[in-house]
Length: 85
Ligand SMILES: [Zn+2]
Image 1 (cartoon, rainbow, N blue to C red):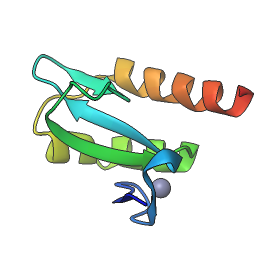
Image 2 (image 1 turned 45 degrees about the vertical axis):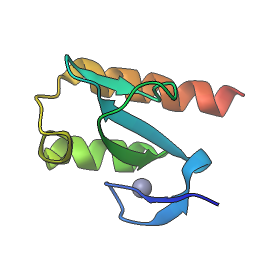
Image 3 (image 1 turned 90 degrees about the horizontal axis):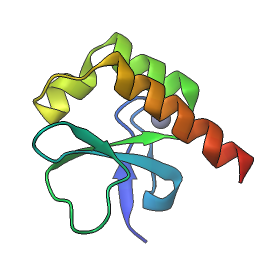
């Protein structure tokens, strides 16, 4: 089991239970395929974790890039999609 830590609540969870965000160069990518490498952070499929990292600007810090509100929208979409599965 591959364990990763959520940047929002700091809990350790299975990789499959987390959203991965990778700074692939130009801009952050959500749940990239296995050919995309870069500095990455993980987040729970949990709105409060998403809100928390944006409020505290943690993604900028971890990914070392600027993070737009658009990304937040994409994360919330991802969250919604996962709940519809
Ligand atoms: Zn979390």
